[in-house]
Image 1 (cartoon, rainbow, N blue to C red):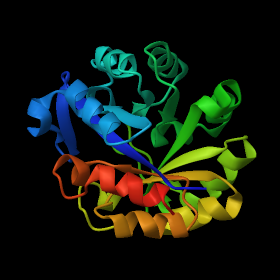
Image 2 (image 1 turned 120 degrees about the horizontal axis):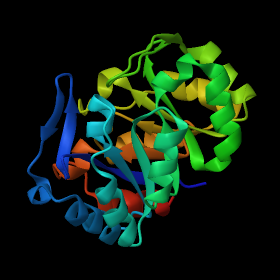
Image 3 (image 1 turned 120 degrees about the vertical axis):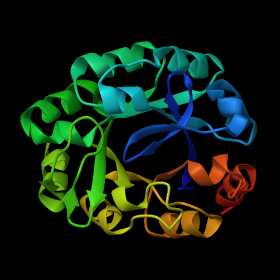
Length: 238
């Protein structure tokens, strides 16, 4: 199965942004217009877009539901994220047109409730794993510190089929992807999407070779370091 390349569109206040330790930082690509960025990604051959509400992630207020609707209206399949932790936030993202929603790592503090959500939403819910070595450390408005392997085993036992692994130390670093947590996910039979640090086609090839289902690319594509059209064509041709 070919590795799927999923462009990330991070949004704060209705404009393109990126995450930083101090909160969202505006970026100038596409004049800050999320819809323009989404159109460019679709024209490059992307079939699924990862849309992150940074306001929700950092403040708890979903201020970018309109962006989700606008991107979905372009005909894009949307995977919504933004430290989403409860039923209400999941439902709102789905109602706005998202095909899938990422359950934030902070929700895993309550494995019983996370298991209920996994059973309720099935394939439409992707379990977020913010990996930092052998720990899960959520970013955003709610933090957590959980053992990586034991948590993987718990969500797998709850019926999760897909996870999004974000290398916390690698986000926006262009330093290459996280593979330690990926190996655990593959071992358990979870379909794994990897985000954080991806900067090149070689990075994507590495993830493909190690069993990842998909890769989320953000900064490298927005800044033109990674040619999205070339990356998608190269992976598709494998």
